[in-house]
Amino acid sequence: MAVNILFAAHPERWDTYQAPLETALSKAGVAARLSTSLPAEEVDYIVYAPNSEVQDFTPFTRARAVLNLWAGVEDVVGNPTLRIPLARMVDHGLTQGMMEWVTGHVLRHHLGMDAHIHGQDGVWRKTIPPLAQDRPVTVLGLGALGRACAEALRALGFAVTGWSRSPKDIPGINCLAGDAGLRDALRTAEILVLLLPLTAQTENLLNTARLALLPRGAVIVNPGRGPLIDDDALLDALDAGHVGHATLDVFRVEPLPPDHPYWAHPRVTVTPHIASETRPDTAAQVIAENIRRGEAREPFLHLVDRKTGY
Image (cartoon, rainbow, N blue to C red; front, side, top):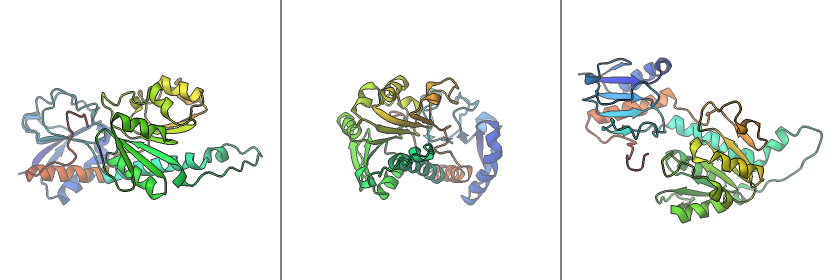
C-alpha cells in the first residue's frame, strides 16, 4: 500500500522537487502517493517548508513525521500544534555548499584579497599574510555544518577553535563549551564564523560585550542566522575599528532593505543568503531515507530536540 506524502512548500518548489523526490522514493523502495494536495486525515508524512501555508498540524491525525526542507527549524519547532517528530534537513549538498562558501570567505580575509581586488589604482601594495597555522579561526556552532567547516579549515592548516553549547570532541579542533569557553573562543578569534542555530539562547549572542572580547581588527563571517548578531552593536564595533570587517549572508529581515546601513558600510560585505541552499537531488535522498525508516519502524534521522530548539 502506498504511503501518502504531502509536499507543503511554496508552489514554485514543487516543480524542482517532484521528480527528485519520486526518483529517490523509488530507489528507497517506498511506494508513495506524492502530492501538493491531499486530505489531511490521509497524510502519512509532510515534506515541509516553514513558510508554507500549512501552519496548523492538528488536522493531520495519522501523520508520522514532518520532514523539514531547511536546516533551520526555528520557525516551526515552537508550533504548539506540532506534536509528531520533526526532522531537520542535513544533506550532503547543503553541507558541501556551506563548506565551500565559508572556506572561500575565510581565505579571502586571511589572504587580504580585497585590497588587491579593489585597489587597482597603481599603488604597489605588498603585504604578506601569515600562514594559516598562525591565523586563529573560531567557529561558533559544531553541528553538522559547523563541524564540516571547522574540519575543512583545519585541513587547510588553520588553527581552529570550535565552540558549542554542549561539549564536543573533534580531532584537530580545540573544542570549547559553556560560557567560559565562549569567552575564550572569542578572545582568540581573528576570524569568527557563526554557524549556530537560532534559539532564545543564541539570539543576540554577539552583543556589545562579546564583540569587545574579539581581537582588534577581527573579521566576522556569518552564514548562520541573522539574529545571532546585535546589528547596532556590530555597526558600532565596525565604526570604531574594533571589528575590521563583517561578511554577512543572513539578516533579520530578508531581502535586506535597500536603506539598511550594512549596504553602504565600507567594512561590510553583504551576500544575499547564498552561503548554502537545499539542493533538491540530495535533499530528496534524505527525505526518502527518513520515510523508508518510518515505514520500517526504524529511528528517524536528524530529529529535532524540542527542548534545545534544534
